[in-house]
Image (tube, rainbow, N blue to C red; front, side):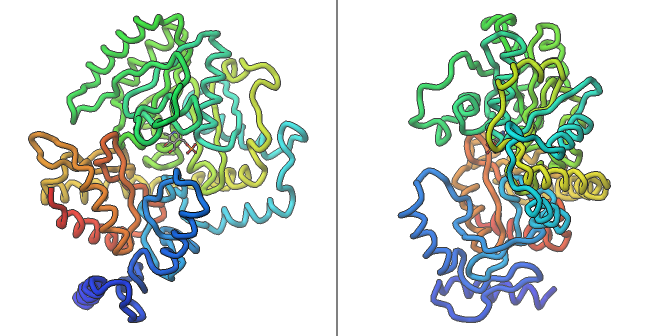
Length: 464
Ligand SMILES: Cc1ncc(COP(=O)(O)O)c(C=O)c1O
């Protein structure tokens, strides 16, 4: 341990000498290995190519080009090994390139790459829908529909709700993120950067407060505001209410159980389709397959993507059979939705969750990491709140605990501090002042401890 620390200090000192430092390894821990400053020369050269060839729009949380990744470790093009606490925005919950998943993809790739379910259907699409119908919350008759991305699941969820109810309006929540296509973007709360320059948005989308006790919005206040908004819109005009049971981009806020119960009763009473967007909080991220399970929440429709494919693009809408059957034949579909290779990946992911080891481990990680973050909060005044559900945890940074002034620059600086030392992290929150943990659930204790030492060093370095 002492030797490791010395090595790390030497390594960090070496980084101060800049990119020209020519030692073989400038930092070597048990998992992290830095051969160059991060980003290294090859990443920098690729970034220059990227700037001239790729549109400005897509952002990079970590300006490092990846070569390959396994488990919770990413190797970049310069040969640096980084610990991944972002999982490609909560996608590789089952780890990078797990053998079972990769083998399922390879086997399927040899058999059928594409048929289009709209042209010549194939059994695996049906099998995945059966599994989703079985595993998602609710004991009622269910059906599923497969698409390619989270945003596409959102679009289809709203189409299904409108077709079922024959009503126009949709209620979404403050701090929500539902994606980047037009309806999904309209439902998304944050203007910059997600909506800047893209007006006009879709009509008949209304926004209610999300319970955020740290910033003065209780579950009770939020529900009162919701009912007032619903009364203004007209309950018989509302097709759907869409909510993330745990806000993702919005800052890892779990919706209180009583709020979800009230929302469910209101929607059931008024014939409104209640949609849970579990695109980020689903697929084991919170320690159960779906966050809704822990929140005792049974939505009418549930949207999944990200972790569903374990790294391949696939999404799904699953829900009450009579609602799912509302669009007419040909009314929903697409060329690639439920692509056979992506379906094989999703079936492999579901298979990996079937054995409860991964979820048990995720729950254990949730408990131990929460304790670690609480410890950080005691030691570092920049942390205003620690929150989340299971291992889906975040810290909210503030300049001052009394004023709760959001410390977005701190979150950004922490992410930079960490990637320069071999840890990949992401920010979150409407103010950009949260740092979220989305590590692959297969991460080892040793990898986490190594990464967390660096994150805590970063917290110490912040000057509010
Ligand atoms: C909760 C939630 N919904 C929808 C989306 C959109 O998913 P995609 O980026 O796959 O379109 C995201 C993506 O981050 C998300 O977190």
